[in-house]
Image (spheres, rainbow, N blue to C red):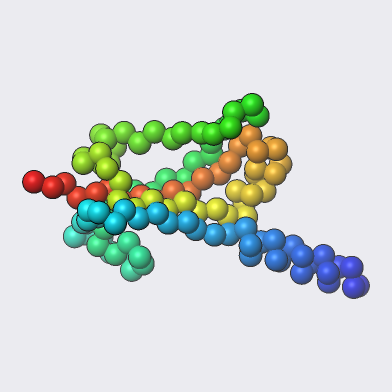
Length: 115
């Protein structure tokens, strides 16, 4: 019974440590407002763009670039806030595929247009 207890504690610790968010914010400029937003979190009153995707990376490549087009969301062409979220499911997918596939959850807020 003790090995099961220790194994479950180890798995629980891995799950807790593998879920985190990293947020980058530009100190210059203001976020693009959204008066119709009904969010009650950090992004209250901001126009947030969210996407969940699985990216595929070759074993030989060292980095990956995801392109955000101006037409999609950012009229100004500048980002004010970027948040990357890592989850346990994303860590498992990366481990099973040996790092070739990664699940990405990203939120970003564009910078407000200046006149």
